[in-house]
Image (cartoon, rainbow, N blue to C red; front, side, top):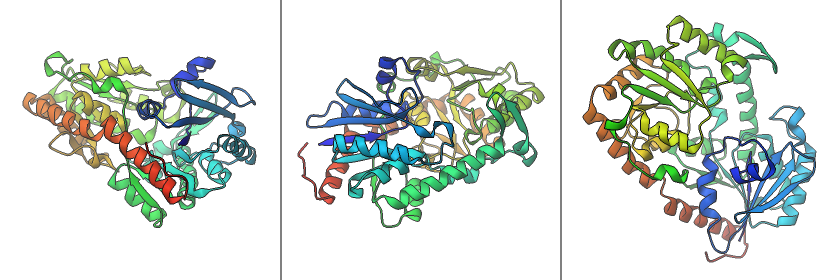
Length: 421
């Protein structure tokens, strides 16, 4: 069976082989590692790149990488380009895949690939986040004044309202793509409901994520943590809700004055974006400069160490599907406090393996974090239950079996040869 993936960026080994800077698609690593080990599979990994106008090709660790030139780089990330469709059409003709598996719905290359495939029955699209839904909640918890504030930087002007529009515009692409396909892979009751509302006639398949291998090892231990420390996996743009946590932090510090917040991910946003300007304003106004530390991008080993070091993981997002950051925390046993949005309740169950609070309710967030800080029994119970839940949800064996069954069913439906894997 020939499987072709279309993804936004290559895997780490492709980055390293050509000297490209590694991106942030960590969630692709786990499932691709499993797929490349399967007998009877030819695995092709296609991605847009801006390094050369030639198609980059390399075969590394049983994956054939094809990086085609992205002509949309000087335009908008949501405007399609006929030349990209032509590039993809050539690649698809050469590979002649049985399955074209597209990851993500909102980028221009999703529609370009759908248009380039002659047999629509061979296409399946995986839901990541649903930006058409995220756009609705993008500015939750942010005042109109702050949403309109402009920041002038090296990339031109920026505002939170402008970012919301970009999500809205990507959402139009997403809806168009979902209406064009017959098969969709999702992982929560929420994304299923959203997809069915857009395209009631599509076939929806369930398949959970497979996380990076390191997070399946070890167990968080409350006796080895930095007491009253909070870990946030990212907070560089509005939808991630870092502002909600910062508004909650003064109330948390009233009970636990030594509370520290560690924020991973892109930290250049603090100086380059309007949202970064807004975050700095909150930190200054609430005198939080010594309580909040931005630690930058973390590789998987540093992320693993941080999850074992923290007392609690907080995900304050305005909208999410099933964030892998929460899954990784649960898998190592770190107690999780998360906003009850989107598909979060499909992976974390309130009061059993996590504490869920209402989105933008910083009083509820503060109360939830304090409950974990002040009750070791509660923290250990959440740790144990969360790990059990995550081990079932993110089972590498089960998820690979499900994915292969989906591929087989699509091949059968598209009247291709049925393979025995």
